[in-house]
Every structure is written in structure tokens, then in C-alpha cells.
Length: 194
Image (cartoon, rainbow, N blue to C red; front, side):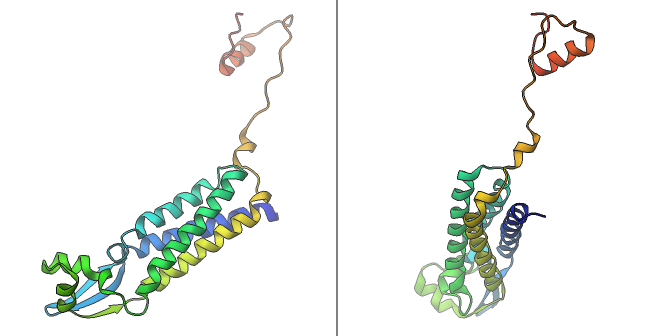
């Protein structure tokens, strides 16, 4: 495997893998709020509402990187850094002690209470799970893979070029046409009767 194909494969796989892990993490329990009537699990999608769209963006970036030319690779690499950075910034505060704002939508849905003071009175404790850390690692991997795209994009070979065909050579008008040649002309979109 050459450096060109290895750099491309590693960065694309890293972005896809990290995006998938982050998307799975968004459905898992990130925090557990202790209320008077029991524990309330809060998923990553509730704690960080933009987590799922950002991880879907990372997955799309990974797939599109396999198809685009050099200029768009640089743009998508920079976008991957931004997506990874945004997810890291949004998930880092939930690692140690999640803020009440992360569990507020779930508490409001369960108790009907709204407002910062009412939620603060209802929540006795908030504990974190390992999923914010897992998602933070995935976000860092996305950002690093985006940086690798920026560093190696000039080495990549465009994926679609191996499937293009050379233009057909003009045929000699004096040569006789047989049935196969006529069908080939029709397949290319040429009218063999002209």
C-alpha cells in the first residue's frame, strides 16, 4: 500500500469510525439526575442537542472525502476540524459534573417544572457516565483526521478517475459498418445512419 492510499484510507476510516462512535454515544446515557422520586437518565442527544447532527456531518464528511477533488478535500478537512472542535467543546463540560442545563430538558419533561431555580430545587445530584469521555475522544480523532486531510490532501488520487474512459477515436467513414459497430455507436449515443 502506498503512502497516497494509506493516508487517504486512514483519514477516511478515522472520521467514519469516530463519527459512528459519537453517533452511538449520542443515544447513550451521559448523565444521571437524582430527583426526589428516583434517578433520571439523560442521553447525549438531550444533554447536547446538536451532537447527533454534528456526528452525522462527520459521517457525511468521511464519505464525501472519497469522492471529491483536491480543493474540496481541503475545505472538508477544515470542516472536520471544526466539527471535532465543536463536539469537544460541547462534551467536555459534561465529563466531571454535568451542569443543570444539560439535564434540564429531561427534568422538565418528567416533572413539568421549568426555569433554572425550579430545576435546581428538584435535582438533588447529577452524576456523569463514561460516554462524554468516549465522545470527547471521538471528537479529538475527527479533528486530528481533519488535520491529516489538510496535510496529505495533495497526495491523494481522485477516486473517480480510474473509471473514466478515453474518448473514442473517430472512425474512418470509408470503413464498412457491421452490426456490432452500429450497436456500439448507438450505445455511445452516436447515430450510425448519419
